[in-house]
Length: 108
Image 1 (cartoon, rainbow, N blue to C red):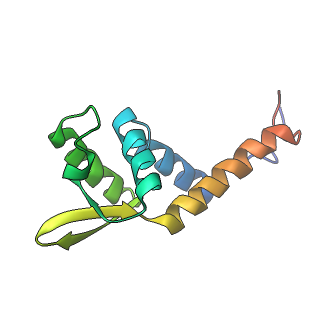
Image 2: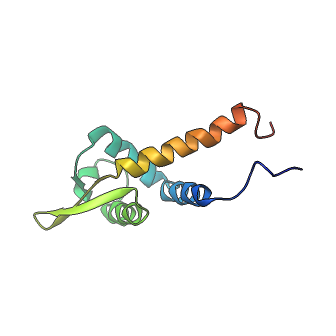
């Protein structure tokens, strides 16, 4: 097997880091909601989703730590929004990776 075209890189580390950041269903739900809203949201904004507030708060913090979210305080309450630059970069890198399988670089 020839791995001359497949090598580990910083991009691979970033993709893996991003994948871990959204690898939990509550985080995908939060991401989906934030993609629709595109504004600063507090944990209470997600009360309609079927997870506990504590779970939502913990996962918002984890997503912030991973770089997926930005945080600021509004009236002493933490609010979050998407780090769109990071999201766009990782989304493009995932698309590029998946495109490799369609262009013959990866075995079928």
